[in-house]
Length: 313
Image (tube, rainbow, N blue to C red):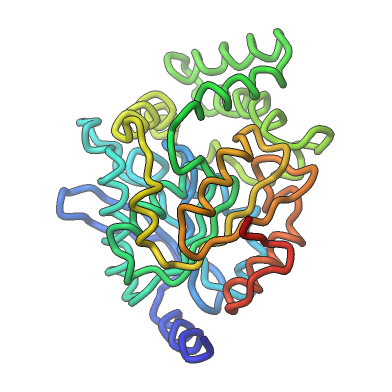
């Protein structure tokens, strides 16, 4: 493990900081940047249709010990918004991650993924098992579709008042057809963030800004990318293919996340070397709600030690 860490630390020196554009073979541009110093971690944001800003501010403490490589997935942020939405399939996202690995010059990557992001990480590990060192999933979607959307939607809806639902619907409509998309985006997430947190947790704990992209990118991401990418995944169930993935994987999930914990637990038996760390009184942003616990766990894990509270039922 020490040799691997030293090798990764050396490779980190070759990763330039600042914004960059990666050209894919399909003339899709992927925006990326690196921050911090130390062994690299490639960060995969959620969505689909969001950008790296949904994580960057809250993950900043990790940059003290790691080089964090952020990128905006196609169909969001500063990356290409393709006219042909068929180019937003989940397989396209997986290919983009491989292109990024090659561009970074990394033999293997440690992947940190949030929410929808673990779908890209898991499928990448299935397709490129020798290119992944470790995976960290924060508040992930489940490894199979099942009743995920119904259960998740019902739980989120139960946490909103009628007035809040009307406000969210109005903001969503303004994002799609209004004149001030950025303002509408902020109004949407002002309503949408609190029910994704544990009860009583102030929204101010989440420092991430989900509305830093251009108006065009915000509108495109929230009206086109999500439906196109989710649609490409069909009735997904990756459990059988995941059995061949030997990559150590740490799943961190809040017990009050609207994504059902019982469904998230299915990652553990599906992966040969995975454990789950369940955080009490924590919602969908564990890295913002319980940063001390989460970052300590990540540091232990990236050094080759399982956090003591992480279990494999």
